[in-house]
Image 1 (cartoon, helix red, strand yellow):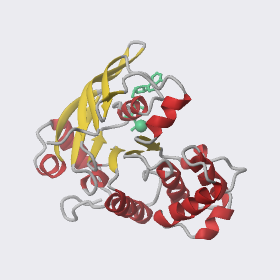
Image 2 (cartoon, rainbow, N blue to C red; image 1 turned 180 degrees about the horizontal axis):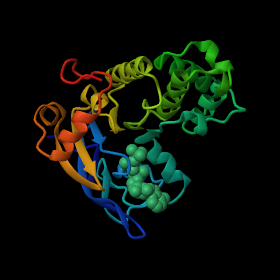
Image 3 (cartoon, protein in one colour; image 1 turned 180 degrees about the vertical axis):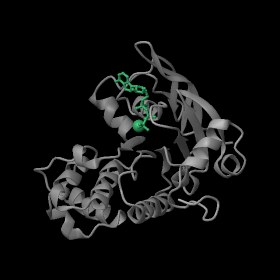
Amino acid sequence: MSTPLIKVSNLSKQYGDLLAVADVSFELPPSGSIGIVGESGSGKTTVAKILVGLERATSGKIEVEGQDWSLPAKNSKERRERAKYLQIVFQDPYSSLDPRQSIGTALREALSISMKDSDEVIVRASELADLVGLPQRILELRPAKLSGGQRQRVAIARALASNPKALILDESVAALDVSIQAQILNLLVDIREQTGIAYILVSHDLAVVRHFADSLIVMKNGNVVERGQTEAVMDQPNHEYTKLLLASVPGPGWVPGKRSI
Ligand SMILES: Nc1ncnc2c1ncn2[C@@H]1O[C@H](COP(=O)(O)OP(=O)(O)OP(=O)(O)O)[C@@H](O)[C@H]1O
Ligand SMILES: [Mg+2]
């Protein structure tokens, strides 16, 4: 097997008395995709935040292409360097977009972190809009004028501005209605084919993960209770908790007839 793009070893996070993440390990191969699933409060977002340096692990190790990322970036130079490897898209892009800024300005701002030439930045912003399936006229608008699905496309475009090798999607489609969810998931599959980007898909919805992630880990109370290739885990879950999750989450891609909604 090739060197993993991201290797997480024995990651733990303690919040006071609460062990939010307990000894979590997984690997993401280059251009691979892994799902992190589990009920609310199981520690999924905490793992994601530690990976992008928004939280600090209590213990454990993170390696990205062999570099030690266990501690958050020390300075802005290191943060810029890490941005070329890993970006995150959260559930609610509205809160992360400046309401006074046009979409074009937001994209160009994200691009200027890594690009000097202003003409190049303008061209690339327009290419990013194409890549995520947004019409060019959207670039003139402010976030309030966009639909939820369009805003999520903007958040994805902005995350792609640094041309990262991996993207974390934390419940990135959960707030959208089912048909828009499917559109965004298809878009992410297309982007993966075009760019070779790797994904970490955080979701409480096993049906979303089923169509998207090559492998998955199932978390409960901070622990990984099951792991494996997605198909294998879904078809033959070993842990009672995984069976429970499978039985309780109808959603897009749910096999009709297995359970009525
Ligand atoms: N900053 C914090 N301070 C204290 N406790 C926290 C903090 N952030 C998260 N927690 C706790 O850690 C646990 C894991 O939270 P986390 O957000 O990782 O769960 P999650 O699996 O992402 O849940 P959800 O599906 O609802 O998003 C929860 O019990 C939560 O209350
Ligand atoms: Mg979460």
